[in-house]
Amino acid sequence: MNNKERLELAHWTVAQAKKAGASEAAVWVGNSREIEIEYREKRIDKLQESTENGLGLSVYLNGRYSNNNTNDLRKETLGRFIEEAVAMTKYLGEDPYRSLPDPKYYEGRKDIDLDICDAKYDSVTSDQRVKLARDAEDHALSLSDKIVSCSASYSDGIYESVKVHSNGFEGSQRSTAYSLGVDVAVTDDKGARPRAWDWKTVRHFNELPAPPTYGDQAVEKALASIGQTKIESGSYDIIVENRARASLLGALEEPMNGSNLQQKNSCLEGKLGEQVFSELLTVREDPFIKGALGSGLYDPDGFPRRKRTIVEKGVLKEYLIDWYYSRKLGVEPTGAYLSNVIFELGNRSLDEMIKSMDKGILITGFIGGNSNATTGDFSFGIVGKYVEGGKVIKPINEMNISGNILEFWKQLVEIGNDPYQYSSLMRPSMSFKGASLTGV
Image (cartoon, rainbow, N blue to C red; front, top):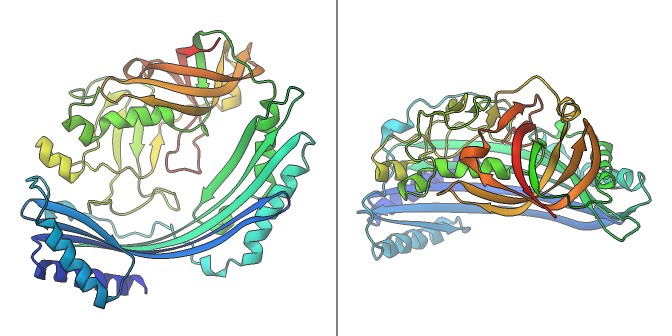
């Protein structure tokens, strides 16, 4: 089944839902094919291929709403599925804010090729896939006799979907993704086993970096973590490396969402247009970057994607509000689903930022923790390196960083020139003054 056939099926499903009594209906029909390979101890440890078809039906019936899913796309069985979905929706409680978006919000969608689908996906062979994982592991294992565990993983997938609303929206998308990565653990004289990884995801097969690069970076980081220790609690200048998981940025995004705003669970409520963060922080969304992982023409509500500024020089410019919560809040929807998030960059590299640090911490990863959208308080475990006089002195772990986003993001003093390219969140390295760290 191709997307043209899926569109026909989606329109048929919408018509059947209306015939069964639905006031409105939205239908998603998609297919995914994914292949995963893992090499461990110089042999294939995992080889898996999966193909999945799916159909999602959202039923709106006089203020009642349900979401229903099936993997059986035969019309002879879908008819019964649709009838039962509509019939069950009648028993749900009413929610006057549940409806499809006003069709005026579907207008203005761009018709451009975002280059998110590799036309050569079907020409990638099993031998090529296996060789990439094998070569990545072989190279990593050759780099140090301290390695006690090593695995390399390759995966790829092709994703096709259509979406149809009973009040006029129709959309179609096709995309691919390729990933390759290495995970290693090393040992020291005391039996500790620090781990490190390097993983990259791209849209096109020929954009994957060569296999040796993953082992080079993963092994280097693992060896540099030998001898990890805690340091004294206190206030430290910090640099957050660009590839570190985006825990702090997640804590920043959460209170911008319409659900938290409507439920009075947002520390950013009422702060639209105010200088809330450091003037160095400018955050934008650009869904039209060719070949980027977050690129797309429409969001799950059917709203056309658009470029927008969320934070400008520390001023909160826009909340993230979908159709449903816009109705509950009585405001215009802005779109709650982010695509590619980009930052206004500085002029220096991470190495240059480290060399100018007198005394502080380079955070290379986050481990667990939580944030509170209502108060803005956060606490995350960290791993990283202690820096003094512009030089890395020793690795650290088992420490926490804590604070409040309303204060913490005012302490941003520099943004690097190194956006992370293998994510839809293209975060650069960032430097902060006086962060609170808990250790010994």
